[in-house]
Image (cartoon, rainbow, N blue to C red; front, side, top):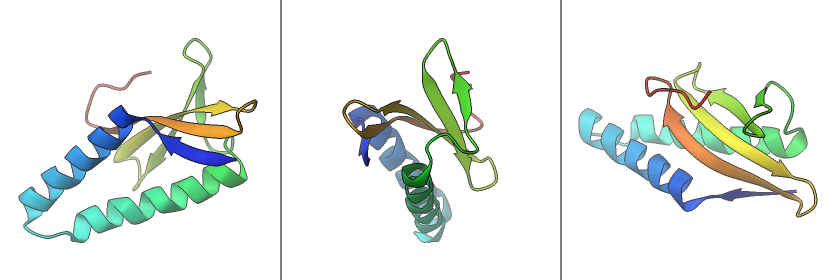
Length: 97
């Protein structure tokens, strides 16, 4: 399988990094977010269903990183052999489900 990000998810991720860089005056927290996402991608490549919440109506999975501070929503397309990251959000934002 391969992990692919939608444009919206990438934009949300980059906006989040920009926010934390500006707020903290350093890249250290952004680096932490990036490392957590890299680790998450490795985990979902091994088993996309483990430790995830599934919404049947939306056909989407949700995982958290950094002790629940950020949410990653993704779809699994077995036919195309792709895991598509659809949304990246702060847990303080209204959840999609």
